[in-house]
Image (cartoon, rainbow, N blue to C red; front, side, top):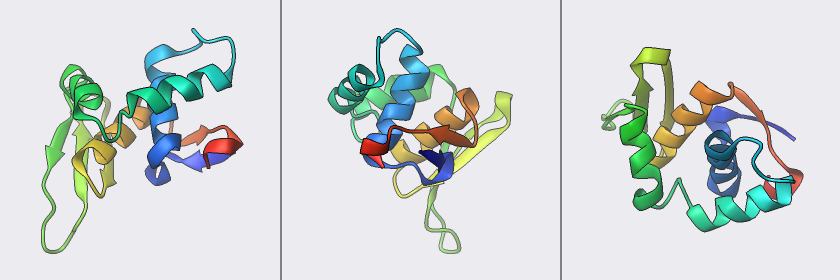
Length: 109
């Protein structure tokens, strides 16, 4: 199912990050789903943090006028927002690698 990158959250977001990280190294989508669930990129700083550092993603704190975190990857001119820093950063990462829409397995949406 096509999902806007800006709307990705939870297992669907983690799956999209795993897709960026692992590409086509898995025989099928079910295997990639399992990897994404184990890694928890959007909730586990130990997994998402190295991606944020490696990809030079800047995080911008919420403000009174905009309560969402912002993530920017300046070299690719990509940005994203989210309720937490890792969610914003992983959305930004996925947008920079895949696109503004991602075809996510139906079981994750």
